[in-house]
Length: 479
Image (cartoon, rainbow, N blue to C red; front, side, top):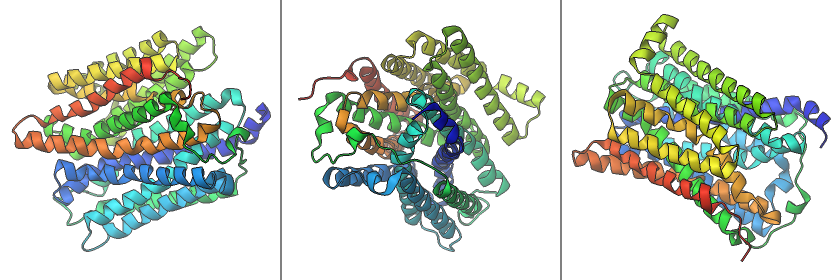
């Protein structure tokens, strides 16, 4: 595909970037729903984390079915195409949001039905995950494929950054979403009806735009055996994806409750502060996309710093808007909350990018070590230091998924598609790790121990990622 194709498909890429944004935005709304549904249905920590489990277990179930079908009768995308797969995923997701709206308007809403709609939402997003990432990589020259994909993922992080602020403001402030003021979860009706409408519109736009259906020839044949599993670095990468997604989602899902219980934050303020966690991933992905470019070192480092600063300003602006703070009030607020702790973590993030020299495995290992240190600080301290330490973890989560994915499929040849579906399947970590942390939290509460020590669960996950980044990623000969 020549460079002129990139210009030809500029509108297609822009539309797909919007898809990545919406995808991240809706996913992160789960973190707002957890404390809300916890209040409405009087859930304990384990039960409230079933919200995340219902959503992410769909990735495993649907990816497993996709893998089986592709191994037996051929890759479904080859039969219906990239574009139609994405449209199907958007329609399923829209139906899920609409069902969410219907149940929220019921006189007697049930927690089980909300879990079903979240599973259906995850089903739609699984199709998007399988089709959208490779599609972005083929819409332009092969040389700039990584840049396009990282940029799209950065906008995915932008969605996860804005969701806690916008969603928190709409649900907890504008619509008064609180179990103290409402008999049922009606505050989620309008947001999810709006999201259903946007997803349907996006499905219609993508259906009518010009998108090529390209699949590498080496991957077009039916792979009748699970040959990909013969590569140890892929199997280790599957475990790495499981632990990474599990750790990231577990922290994000429990942060609002942590800030309410340990720092006395109200719902809206806790949701606003959550944007620093997901916004950190956005900062790291924008910075990482530049770091992996072919720019001269002097320009590269300058643009990396510019991207970090610009992204941070965007988070500040969104936060201050949500909290209705003037510039002077925002300055005083962040000074009182010791924002410099987050700034120091941001500088460390930048320096590790430079030190790692854009090597995916080395960057992954260093970032995993940084998260272990931050979680250790969070567990051993209190107050604002503990708060900013856990929020800063998002900065180092940023490039983990893309780096693990790239390292795991390296050298698979004809098994690349099969390996990709196996990696997507292991997003299951986002379904299992959060309830595990929630269960541990409940046990600690019953034992009169500070429940925030349950954050040792994601710390264990990052320990494995240290090993994978330094040793487990190495490509071995096929057995």
